[in-house]
Structures are given as structure tokens and as C-alpha cells.
Image (tube, rainbow, N blue to C red):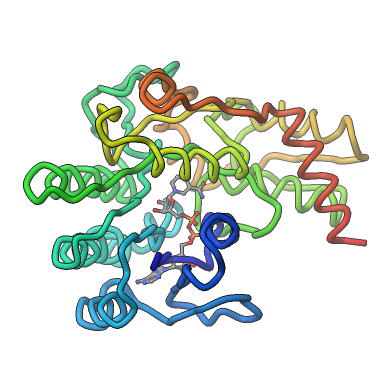
Length: 308
Ligand SMILES: NC(=O)c1ccc[n+]([C@@H]2O[C@H](COP(=O)([O-])OP(=O)(O)OC[C@H]3O[C@@H](n4cnc5c(N)ncnc54)[C@H](O)[C@@H]3O)[C@@H](O)[C@H]2O)c1
């Protein structure tokens, strides 16, 4: 059986569907702090910071693989650092402890937020000193270290990707710094205008959700002995400025974007512009399929359909 924590979030919403399709609906248990609404499949409410109840859920359901997506993202993390540390570090420790006890395989995502302002911002390498300034980034570095510790000392097969900003149409995200890219599409379709919370020249690494889900499944399927890294693979697809994205959307619909940077600009300023992912490409043959124009067509077609 496979458990997905944080299953009602931006990634979980789509990963659960992909896992249901790959392994069968009856093999997947989705879990989250929130109520599931009209979720189609098996669901259990679960707080990953509560070790006893998390342990019980795993025991009772004979869980063998966990996709651990429960987390507090960057923008929410800066506003509530205590909660961010509790969920991202203590919650992960609980997941790792239970993985050791039950001999589980794990997927635990990291983020480009692990990089701080001192690393090369263009084509940021896999192996650099990690010195993030945000609370979220610091918890993600700690997460990578914990995962590596459990891999090296307890033989837990734990894998992870440093996701860039993810763009999707099935779920409107909240709490992340790259949310502006997703909001721009949603607001363009719903209102024809958007006020962007970073400046027009802010350029960050991004990826379409379909590529991110495929990467996740491909990494989990890769033979262990082909992997030179475990919880922290750099992954890249595209980088564009907020204005380049607005221009791309404007080429499809009548759309006006204005820029009113807020506290999230400071977070974005410390992150890389583009990512070097040659290790992922070499070790498990990662290759993205979506660029900005293909992604935009897909986003607009699907959001239009939902708004009809
Ligand atoms: N979405 C992105 O652009 C992005 C980029 C880089 C890394 N990531 C990483 O991917 C993972 C998933 O991100 P996401 O975008 O789906 O996040 P999200 O915020 O959309 O979803 C996280 C889910 O976790 C749940 N949650 C929060 N606290 C919990 C707790 N104590 N117990 C159980 N569930 C809890 C929330 O209810 C939410 O549904 C995170 O580790 C995040 O750091 C995401």
C-alpha cells in the first residue's frame, strides 16, 4: 500500500491521480490535515506532527511506500516560522522514524529554496554550499540532511527532488513564492488582469506539473544503484521573468498585468534563476517535455474549459 501525506495540496492533487492510474485506486491512501471534500478514493485524516497517530495509520494499513508531501511552503513559512519548523522538520522526522520501523521506501521533496544568495544564480550546480536565508529554505536543507542520514545509517531508500516553482491548473496554490506564475493564468482567464506580487524582471526556475509528476515517478522507478544522490536531485525545465510569462499569456488572450512587489520579492531575490540538472539527466535520464509556450497552451485550454 502507498500513503501520500499532504495529498490535498498542489502536488498531491495530481500525484494521487497519477499513482491511482499506475498502481490501482485500491492501492493508494491519500491523507491530509484538511477535509477531503469530494475526493475520489481512500482517504484518512492525518497530522504528520503527531507521531502516534501517523505510526498507527501506517501500521493499520501496511504501508510500504510513502510520498511525503505535507509541508508549509515558503511564503507561509516566513509568516509562521514556528509552524514551518514543526511540520517540515519534526513532521519529516516522524515520517523517517516510521519508515525505519516499517522498512518503507520514501519520496520526500526538497526545493530550490535550499540555495541561498551566495551560490551562482545562473545554472546553479547540484553540489554547492547550502546557505538559505529563509526559514522555509533552512527547513528544506535540514530535511535533505535528515533524509541522507536515514539513507546512510538506516538503509532507508529515500529519494527526493529539489522542485522548481510548479505550474498547474487542477489546484490553485497558496503559500508559495512562485504562486504568482499560477495565479497569473487563473486571473487572466477569470478577470483578464492580474496584480503580480513580484517585479516584472523577476526570473525564477519553473516547471509544468505534468513534467514534475513524471519526474517523481521516474525517480522512484530508477534502479537504486544508478543514483548518485538521494533526497536532493536538482531538476530543471524552464526559466522566465514575470513579464515574459505575462507576454506569453497576452499572445493568447486580452490580458493586462501590473506589478506590486510585496514581502515575497525578498524571498524570490535569494533564489536561483536557473538550475543545472545534469546529474538527474545522467543518473535517471530525466528530460522535460514542456516549455513556456507548450505549457501556456495547456494551461489556457484547461482553465478555459473549467470556466465555461
Ligand atoms: N508547489 C511547488 O511549487 C513546490 C516547489 C518546491 C518544493 N515543493 C515541495 O513539495 C511538497 C508539496 O508541496 P505542495 O506545493 O503540494 O504544497 P501545498 O501547500 O499545496 O500542500 C501541502 C499539504 O500539506 C498539508 N499539511 C500541512 N501541514 C500538515 C500536517 N501537519 N500534517 C499533514 N498534512 C499537512 C496541507 O493541508 C496541504 O494540503 C512540499 O514539501 C514542498 O516544500 C513544492
